[in-house]
Length: 365
Image (cartoon, rainbow, N blue to C red; front, side, top):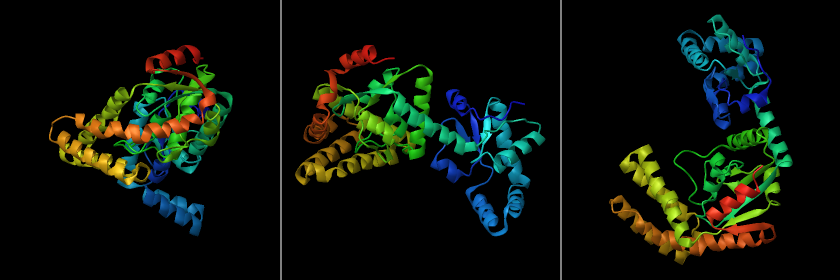
């Protein structure tokens, strides 16, 4: 049998598949990219056992746990664990602290003829390892920041360069009023875990310098880790300067065409189009105060017309009638103001291709 492990870094470096035995509510709050939720107990069962533990002690709580996970319930959960173990012979299992839930499941699998190792210290030890990686990476690495006005394809830049981390990808949010996707945003814990694992892998591969996209303190509902954010505020900035027309065309694809496709693929044509229209209108409504009521009314009117036209199957070009002024009236002035505060940190300006070449040959390590 493979030994139980406390080599947490190697588990993340290898993208090791793992069974997460915690209850669904625990998993949903935060987990790891290659872990699968196959809980020993449901949320309700866990709550009952927890209450029993407080009122009657550990022995009675264990007895209740065995009563709740017995018979056909136990058979079904065993089948799921066995299927995973057979499909992932290199994997591990864990619970919150590597305690009773892990050892119980491990013993049951052993009785079924499957020797499967567990992670010593469980989820808590794995999570603490990633928090250490995040802190150490923020301290040890140097950074370059990719800036540019909205629509400059900054996220594309960090995805084509080897020594870069896509913070918005980790957050599953574009960091703007129109930044959400059909799939839900990452939890704070999952966001931090993604960044930490990416840093660990980059450093393990020998990187000493990383490229990040210019971000505010928040990306949607998640916060950048404090130490990383502070380090980013001192890093050199490379500014992409692409023309308004090109940036507007990119936003048409990102904010409208791709989102219509995502919503309709997920919800079907009728509901998907309705929900996508809500996404666009609510995105504009969120910045009504900053736009000013008059400009907001103009843009909302143009957006409503454009939505009606694309829903009628007559193309997307009318969306340019609100996207272009949105950049000119709102996003561009806001970014120009923010960039003034970073003027002494700007080391290069150019179009997308020029900045990509500069970053590739001047910041890769």
